[in-house]
Length: 192
Image (cartoon, rainbow, N blue to C red; front, side, top):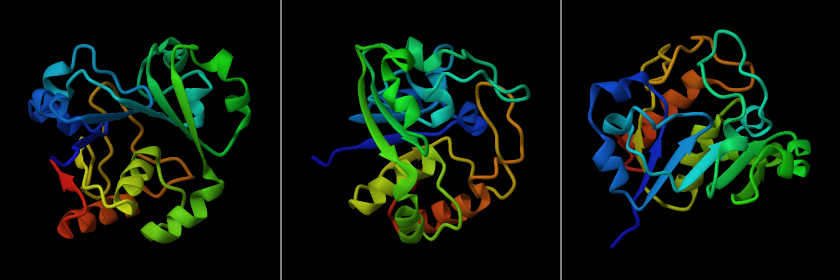
């Protein structure tokens, strides 16, 4: 049997389908940053086999006004979780005992390898952590099922709170959306 992987984004369109059981049935379930499951299980499931964090969440930085509500200490409060930290700054990694609980397992992907990943995937800017995880799968010929990825131009939503429509300066979300649709057409990902 082929290993199945669900990569669960945070799009508000997740609230339009009851994918929870389907997501939980996958062998591996990847979630990002502060994306919640509590209260949303019908739509997003409850299992997580890997939590991918950017430097802001891994470092437990305060949530910026206008972004989704949540717990500033989300990473610090995780327990018995496999965590992949993707970031440009290794300093939070050196303070891992302050940033995450010792019961967690931690891996690090430094963005110093971002230029290679950008070239492979045809990006002009660094990938978001969600797109980076999709890229890792594509690079090793794993066909992931993507849930909760906005693919319509200019659309950026979260199922668990409000989100600024304008992306940060480090990523080109519209470019990522175009590439995701192309990957789906090529059978390299399945977009649900």
